Amino acid sequence: MAVEKKILVIDDEIQIRRLLRVTLEAEGYGVREAETAAEGLRETAALPPEGVILDLGLPDMDGIEVLKRLRSWSNVPVLILSVRDGEDEKIAALDAGADDYLTKPFGGGELLARVRAILRRVQTSGEPSVVRFGDVEFDRAAHVVRRDAGEVHLTAREYDFLALLVKYRGKVLTHRQILREIWGPGAQEQTQYLRVHMAHLRQKLEATPGFPKHLKTDAGIGYRLVE
Image 1: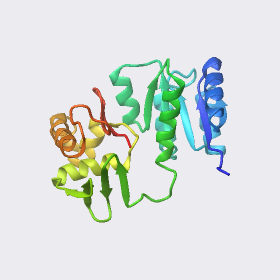
Image 2: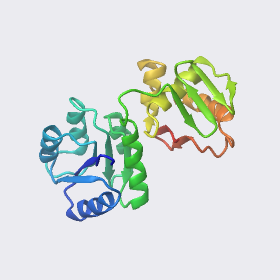
Image 3: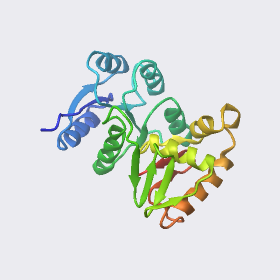
Image 4: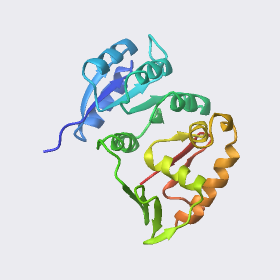
């Protein structure tokens, strides 16, 4: 029998908490609730959940500050749920350590898909040596990428870019995060690097590069790998 995964919902709107509880419990998740930032931080520390759904507009503390405090001592997956739909807000949340961002109003199906995605990253204690998406096989141990069983040649930068997306698959990585990880702090504004390398990766790995199924763009924010 599968172990029930616990989700902590930190949101001051009782209607949203009720909706999330009904949606999540119908899929077999256990749900705990907190209506303030202080309560949410206490709950996370006292009984760590498998995932957190965090609203940015809390009455006692801005959600970004909650996220920063949480990230100072916990790597629990966090899905931001907010009415704030501007790119700047999304980038700030993702750069502060959020795993994903969903704006209100939202559909139950999309919410569940996002929750499954952030939880997949921590299902096992170690990363698998081989990750597959579509007809692509990323073999970390052999440092090889295959498509339809044939080896695909990637440049060093393309490989590093793909490896980062694979490591955080299902999670949106902002342009700044990717540039910082691969090119270093001095390249954080050079987004043209990413556009060029992503175009090359799609040409080599996607069946229809113009309509990518796995190497996705979150417009104005960054990229994610969808399995």
